[in-house]
Image 1 (tube, helix red, strand yellow):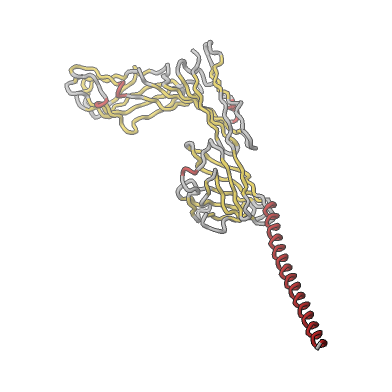
Image 2: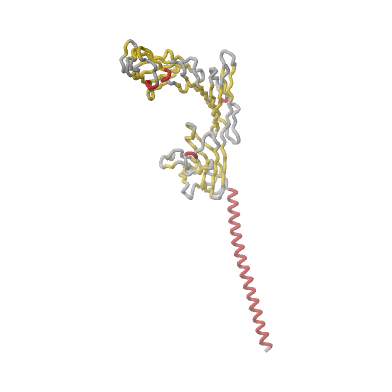
Length: 398
């Protein structure tokens, strides 16, 4: 009996030992699998982090055109400095995402259109440069004219303005966000009068202290404008303004009762040196008078109608001739009516302009007639096509 019990005890120890071995091997296998999985995940994360740190995309340049105070053309260049292709998921300007644009590879000479609904987006090949062209109209044609692409922003309010900073954000498949900010130039303008008490004072506009902050851009253009507020030229001669009429009988040089259609008044202005003329502002209804016998006065606005498109201007030397076409209803009971034009209250808005790099300090514009008030505006443009605008008021010394 004792030997039989010893035999059972020996079998139990062997089974227990085998079970321990199975447990240890299973645990080691599971641990090895976990370590291998973790190592693979860690290696993947390290590879992703390594690739993410090496990826580099730069916004190299900005090319714009401005018309009417808004961008009419907007292009910029993305450059890859990465050894692998870079997938671009999204591009935003001032926080507004681009939904459509045309792209063209400088290196590979390929092109296409990007749309935010395309999950593949845009892929920039290693060390390639891609020119991005934005559509600022409802629909734009590609340069080859073989395809259309739509307005590049969600709405017109997202389009950047020329005199504001522009921030680019480029988002990639590797979860990188590459940012660059383009700053507009800062204009500084000073208006002064040389020899103010002499016979020939000269107006000097100085923008040489304008500067470009924070970027590699430089100021390439200074553009000046001088607008007179209620400026009446000393050479304004309306007393000798001439009148012509057609379609209505004339007796003894006077208009008969009825409607005078096709009448024109011509006013001559002398443009100061260095100026180009702006708008000649007339209110003919308040400045026309009528003389004759009977009920000839007053000539109110109800009797006066400017003709659409009836203003023409011609410049000969420094003399600007402004012709105004209008129709006048002669009041009933007025006979032998004659028209006259009062010079009071008639203004000519003159604008002086000069542009070019040599005009950091403007050429002589003067003299500006005192005591009129002028708005002097300096617009500086940098090499990125961004503008900085500064208006100042200036009153020449008496």
